[in-house]
Image (cartoon, rainbow, N blue to C red; front, side, top):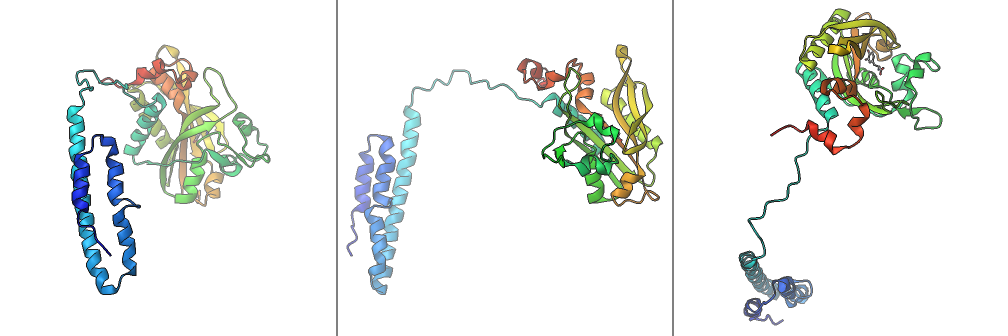
Length: 329
Ligand code: DAH
């Protein structure tokens, strides 16, 4: 087998004769590529007797590294030549302004709520949007055909209505209790779906659910928790009132209103003491543990917080509207 002694010199001559940098790769490949003479020599090594093989391999490898180093140098020379000779770039032109993005107002409000509860030792937990009838209704004490289901008309995923788009974030209470047991302090924001649409309702909206399971949980603590939260959220010690209401999964249940400037009393959330059937169904002994829970619509809070009159504005993707929530620099 003959090893060409002049491979490196011949590569050197061809590199210095390169007139077009675009030909660089082709030249490199003719010396080092799959079909190059060198590669063919490497593959013929296997036919040599063992003692010759070692000596040839050594020599071939040294030629290969010599060529690689040569092409590497040539490449950096070429690229620096190219940038220094490219006179078409006008460095005085202003850059392209891609604009500064920002969080969506609903994300801003969601973050404001979760960070408040996180600092009060609630764990944040995310639930499923496609849910079974069991977690959305049954385990929350809404038996089949219960009239309370009427307010939760939704979109079914299966013909037999066994899977649906969840109508509230209360499904996360069940998942959290079954997975983590008691005691528990959890918060869960996310999208929910209902068959509803006007200037204060959307078929898709966002809620946040809160749940505390503890022997010391009481209606008094629930009131304190929510009043403190609302005062913090609006940065205003407004009046808050609890109105008796009904939810199948809480007993007693209440709706919470705030006195909001000239608008008067406005309902902002639902809450109550977790129904013993719900605790029992999740394997928690109601004689040992109490629970309180609350759920609120994030768009509703965001409308009041930002002074938005039409809930649909949040989802029209109108840049002029969305840019108002961009933090100023
Ligand atoms: N899931 C209820 C709804 O969407 C809101 C709610 C009421 C959540 C009371 C709760 C609660 O956790 O205790 O209408």
